[in-house]
Amino acid sequence: MKKIKELLKEASHWVLFTHVHPDADGMGSLLALHLALRERGKTTLPLVEGSPPSFLEFLHGFKDLVTPDRLPRDFPYSESVAVVLDLSEEERVGDLAPVLRRIPRRIVLDHHAQTGSPLPGEHYSDPTAPATALLVWRLLRELNWSMSPAVAENLYTGLYSDTGGFRFENTGEEAFVAAAEMVRCGARPSWVGEHLLENYPPVRFELLRRVLERREFLAGGRGVVSFLALEDFEELGGSPAEAEDLATFLRSMRGVEVSALVKELKPGEVGVSLRSRGSIDVARLAASEGGGGHRRAAGFRKRDLSLFEVLHRVKSKIEALLEE
Ligand SMILES: [Mn+2]
Image (cartoon, rainbow, N blue to C red; front, side):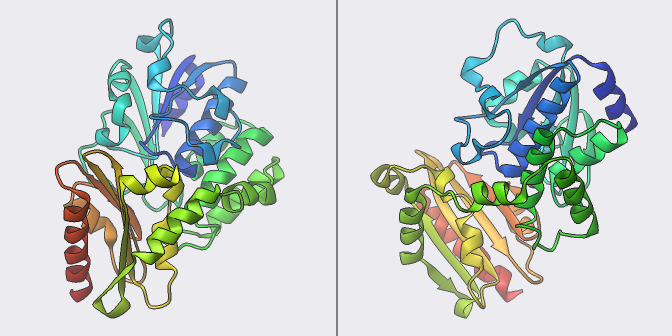
């Protein structure tokens, strides 16, 4: 923490990273830090892999995001500090890995349980923290940096999202203390809630319809799995981002302890989202397949198996997990 604070005070050039398929916490934390650094006269390059997630375009600074195909050539990469937010494993940086390797100094801020090979750099990771946004908030406080309304609202978005709207197991007193301070600094809870939860594109409901039609119960209703194929996204005109977190919706069914949504992300690549409740630990299942996450929300990707092979594998793993 001390080294990280010193770097934040001293260094002038920053390059910010989050994981592939960024969520509200990764993106909110990244854009909050981007604005906080910029407010202190530093130059920052906020990066995003793939196309910027449109469901988060309400975040402040969203238009500043830079994709790997548009990297500025004249940026002083070798004199910069990289901050990697909401992940700690190299694999989850995706196509941005070559950029990350160009930057010698590195800070990693994360709240996931470490599973893969850790990224080299100064780590500030706390698996008990409900969100990376909360780690950024702690850092800003430690540095005595004031929070502008834009920074506060971006952080609030990350915290709100990763706590499931302050209802998940990870939600404790600190989350509410931090949220209260963010609100005091200008974050608008109703505005964030409206953009996150009441602004879904119609295609999401078409995808949800297919997910529900195809749901398959396991172990007498204690498990539920469903899937989306590439054709679904093509036919309906949506992308896997629009099916984000439908696994959480499946878990909300009475009696369900584990839910899984298997998605074909691109030709030859299948992603699996796992959710659980009670004593079931899906982070372990994900780790055994080369992925990671939290006890109740985890995932992994497969590049060597077809959609239905992955689906089959997930079903038997969930059944085994529920038999334990
Ligand atoms: Mn997170």
